[in-house]
Image (cartoon, rainbow, N blue to C red; front, side, top):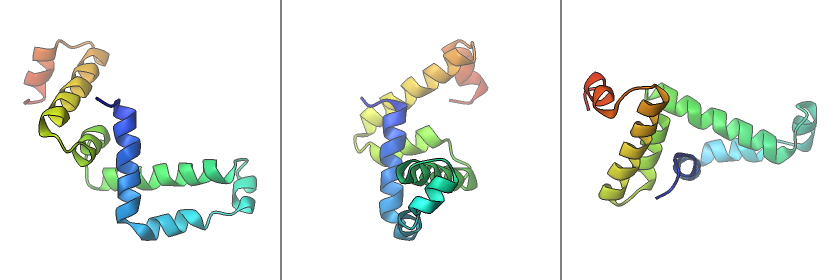
Length: 107
């Protein structure tokens, strides 16, 4: 099973494949643009890519990791396991027991 970060990165790549107009905009980032921002071209493109993907997720009011897992993982059982693992870590970070987290979030 992939990490949440791996799912997110892979889903972002899929998103840009499905939206070539955004990819074209990223490809237009120049050395001068990057220099003006104190970055390399790759760093600035990655920053813009992250912002575009995050804006899409916010606009759709999605949980970025859950959406990314669902987009990437073709095996439903593995997707369910990855989502549960992510949610369990979220509950733990909040200091909640799994049962309490499920009840509060209607899972």
